[in-house]
Image (cartoon, rainbow, N blue to C red; front, top):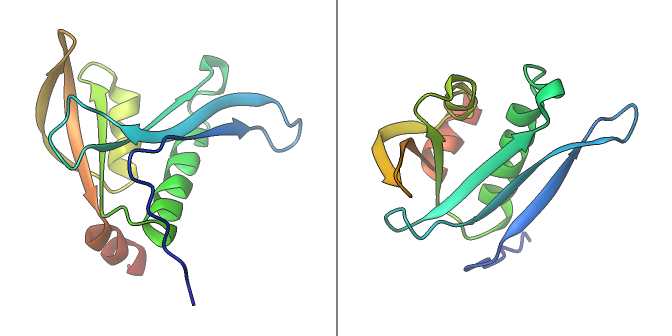
Length: 126
């Protein structure tokens, strides 16, 4: 029997470590983003610039998405990226998110994406 955890407004922050050296190279987390329309649980990530383009953010984000959809009551995830941050937008798209439109937050323009549990389940079955 699988237990589903109700995470409500909780924040989950996870470190990203390089396997070989155990060096901390970034983080991946989830929390509530008040500036987004409900349901407004966001997933976000950051990796040190020297480790960009190695797939670390994509792998960590996919892992966190899987954990959230398999083990919690989360049914919808949001992700945002500055419109000029092409690599971050690509990561979000690789993780299966669907583009919703642009969103202004704190006077900055972001691309807003959403991923539902049902779409995620369909994508992992492919």
